[in-house]
Amino acid sequence: MGVDFDRFSSQKPLFETGSFTGFHRVFGLGSSGYLSATRHYKQPLCGNEEGWGPLSPIRWDFTPCFLDVWLASVAAFGIIFGAAALWWMLHNRRPTHVTKDWHFWTKQVGYLSLG
Image (cartoon, rainbow, N blue to C red; front, top):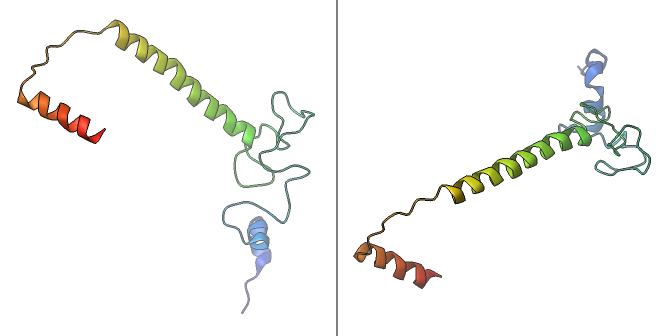
């Protein structure tokens, strides 16, 4: 009453490693680790052994170089649009009138006592 693993040949790495995360410790990652880079590039601007991918031949995941592109684009988006938002806020300031009644002074005393 055993399970016939030959029917599931595409899932053989999962059965051999016992890992549901997709990291195959049995097969290793070559001469370098997962996030390490080599001195000699196999592909332009990517020093990782897995290359640009997008899918890793070793793990069930994207390659580190492919992920770096998306992370860098999010960072560039934040820097560019964050700088634009700061510029807009500094150049479009309008003075507002603040009434300094008991509500204002109560908050000021509360902030000073906490700080």
